[in-house]
Length: 357
Ligand SMILES: *Cc1c(COP(=O)(O)O)cnc(C)c1O
Image 1 (tube, helix red, strand yellow):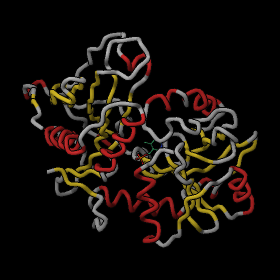
Image 2 (tube, rainbow, N blue to C red; image 1 turned 90 degrees about the vertical axis):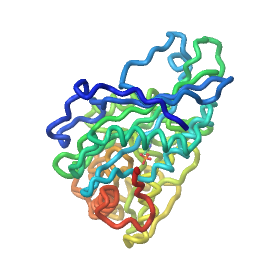
Image 3 (cartoon, helix red, strand yellow; image 1 turned 30 degrees about the vertical axis):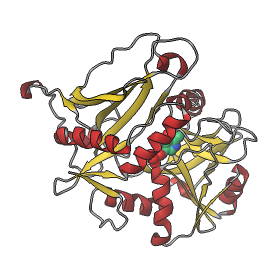
Image 4 (cartoon, rainbow, N blue to C red; image 1 turned 90 degrees about the horizontal axis):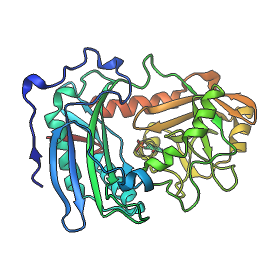
């Protein structure tokens, strides 16, 4: 793929931040973006790296009405040696295509996806923080752009990638979060779009999240839509329990997003000395486990926070506390290992760390 490059005069580039460790999540964007268009006649065409700028779309564009939209979330790191590193980006390319298929949108060649990210990141290298904990968040997205109100799959699309320098999710080490168990709302249903990384899933989750924060909790613990018993995810992360000394996480049943952090935690488990299980888990089992002491830790896993310990669960008007609201040893171990690998400090025997060349 030959990417068209529209350069900015050096004196017009944005100034960098003095302290990337203080950057809020997803508020600042770099100088450039990648775009590529799709039409039925031409397929994906006109790949372009150009100045970060507003999009020009018709108000009738599909995405505004029928939500054909999928996205990815990744991070780029700069190692102590100045290498640009990413974590398992091929997995994101594959998952983007799975999401695209589910939303009836055209797939993107994995090599083109990887090339687009590599060329954009090389051009934007100065934005990739070198401080451990800070990184450059990578947000690819695809939207339906055909200006037509008939309900059908769009015949035109835009693929774009934007970059945002971000600080660490936890500024003073870990800060265990509190969860509210929603027994009325659900994130997705059987046969729905739960496995796809699509904006609509998020739009539908905001009201429950607002109720959770109004009650003083930071995120929602999602249960299954049919019975409101089986645990699915936490906020926008996958969830793990240390139960009876085992690492337990809900099995992928079509409603749970296939997190790459989730997959990596499971793949690391035996090496770090803990047996793992993927199975159905009810909220009752978790509450019983907290009360009996069999449950020692809960943590979320996802690209943004990597690992996010859970200190408190609110269920049917009662609060349950986990590990005295402190970060547990397993959350810490998985966090240290993943971060160590991502910044190129721990030798990568898994082939997970991808160097952009
Ligand atoms: C992106 C996402 C995750 C985490 O996936 P990672 O690949 O680990 O970042 C988990 N749940 C939901 C709903 C998500 O959108």
